Image (cartoon, rainbow, N blue to C red; front, side, top):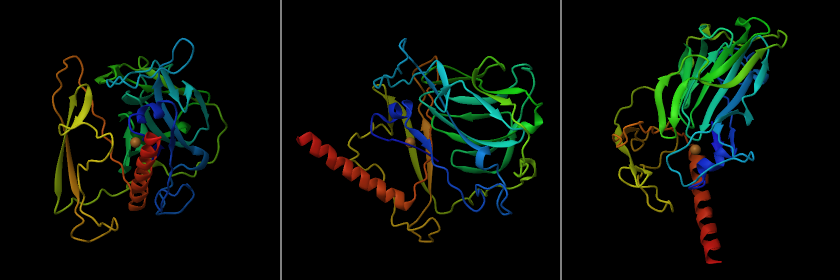
Amino acid sequence: MWYHDHAIDITAENVYRGLAGFYVSFNTLDTGNETDPPPALGLPSGDFDIGLVIQDRLFDRNGFLVYDNFDHNGFLGDKFLVNGKIQPFFQVHPRRCRFRWLNTGPSRFLELFLTDPNNLSAHHPFWQISHDGNLLPRPLLVESVGMAVAERSDVIIDFSQLPPGSSLFIENRLEQKDGRGPTNRILPAGQGNLLLRFDVVLPPVADNSADPATITHLLDVPAAPQNIVTRGFRFDRQNGMWAINGRLMDDDCETIRFRAKLPCTSVHSTEPRCRQVLWKARRRSSSRTSTSDCVPMRTVRQSPALASSSSRATATQRRYQKASSSR
Ligand SMILES: [Cu+2]
């Protein structure tokens, strides 16, 4: 997971200014130790399990960050940062590494490839093992990974396949001209945004991680649900802002838009009241003709404990707001 401040109206700005981090959790499959025996998956761990936060930012001529909270069209930065550094390099050992990629935007969509600057026509496939919600059913050998704003993806790159001393860039090759969304054109290798350079210059070290080619099974997709509830979400623009089902965000969070059937005490609950919900999201066609508006949607899993603590936080926040407005 990744965490960030969710204060109403300034969520994006707080992330833009750097308030975001990884919350890394492990379980019996993804144990955080590549030497663990099965059923542990043997994914690269420790120093070889690395989070990379990718974002673009705009600076003024004095080097200060530019952000307009009243521009609801989104905007693009002209500088690309990884973990807060502009287009850094990363020295690696010739072995497999796991990277947790996160796109914090604010408006940039990514299609990330590995590019050899000395041989632009070379293909450098890598393994994708997760996308946003969880591990994939099995590792996929891919040449690129797409990420909308706020999405994550975990990949494994095997640097032992590269000659010592060589370099490889993470390159975003998705064309995007404004904050409303990408054109969906994939640019030729070397003509996109070079985000980070890997230099294979460190000495060989042990690699006890499993070869993703031999991992046939990561995580099962849940069985198709029965007794399903369907809810529709229609995304549209109103007065230059996003509306869902014709309604704008309720700033006070006082109006309840959906009620879930509770109690649902556990994810394993067999209570008949605890039904699964199918969310159908659709986008009304845009009145703009130049670019399509993109609606990045992210699913967030919240445990019952987290849900109750966040509702407490909201109540506390409301009391605070009332107290400060009555002063
Ligand atoms: Cu969020």
